[in-house]
Length: 229
Length: 229
DNA sequence: CTGTGGTCCAAACAAGCGTTCGAAACCGTC
DNA sequence: GACGGTTTCGAACGCTTGTTTGGACCACAG
Image (cartoon, rainbow over all chains, first blue to last red; front, side):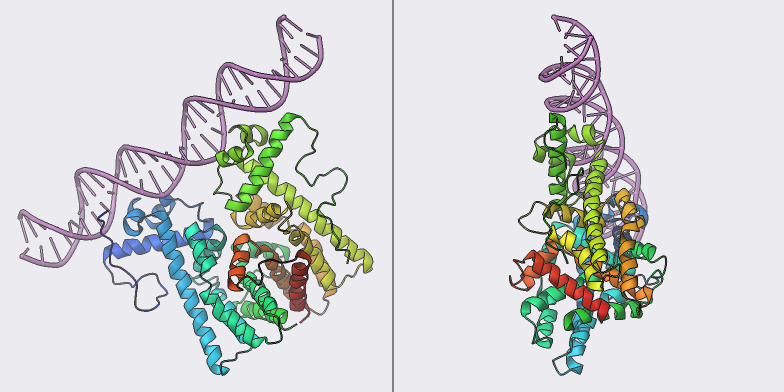
């Protein structure tokens, strides 16, 4: 097992694109695989995409995945970790800003905004981040054991939000706060392609073309009302 | 709202249990397969369960699935269709009752109750219907193409609810009604085992043991507030 | 009893999967 | 221009998958 893993990534700061551009050709292949895999997984699910599908889409050799990532599952986990870290960083940043502007006691709406806006901003149909958020949504139900263990056990990131909400809702029983946070997250997690398609069919096209900022506002409105009622 | 639903209040000929009891031994095998498959799929996902897993769990021969159902996918589709039909029937019945008691113009809350209560009633941890609702939730994201085609295209059942909501919310733009219905459904679809576990971890056990009627009330409260705000 | 239709069973099948291997190709450096 | 480490490549491996097969079994009708 003396394989030549590139020292690779772990970039100092967040990059929207998986890897910096002016890298060696090896990193280029790695990047091609990463992007193709994320796209295919987002579109067709995890088990529905084979190593051969990915390498074919990326235009690289079949063995590339195992060479650069170790295994198919490790590739999946790598994508998952990178996108999760990016998303958590955005959310934390927004929550931090809300804390700053509201003297440490942001209102419910600002907290929900920090929770909802980052993933939904990625849902811009024209942006290339759409696949990232679809990937993460899928990871929640179809992910490997490894991924779901992380999702289940690592609640430290979410706790910042629940703590803030507990402060913002002193008149609510903690139980209620946790359930309503659960419901608010549901709004985000339900935005799979299939669900949006179904909604579009139901509304006969009325909801087909949505404007991102408007959609975020809709979701925050809905969740906020559920908290404040 | 007559929400004193017994777990099984099916009409005359259709059965809550997969098959009548006093059948031939052949039908017994079929039933064993059906139950084992639904359970395993609900627990471990669709692609994560093989034909061999199912037949082993059911204690029948490997070939039984193809003999009785035609194929693995056909078995899945069969379970999906039966459970979907049951659920839709319950929802339709509750909506119909709401229409009756409110002279054809039920308030938002009654409509949401008819939408939310049936699947959540199945979530009783002690009931054997828990696997059915987990199966249906999984079908939404992991289902076969066939299943997702049905989910996407057959909106006739949902349309009864959107129509009722449009009547109940004459002051709202139809667009808003559709989006909020979409959000309300999200509350139901997000109740996977993994999500409830995560919530339980986050709340440090506060939400672990929930009472079904109380949970339904929480969800309806949340959704209603989002509609009426 | 013999025959027949339905069910069950062990075994095998072909296809697809993730992964591995040895050699070829490539690279900057001596 | 030869070298050593890295990357790519085509081919193969071992395994699991869903499905099929042909016969054994059994209840029941003629």
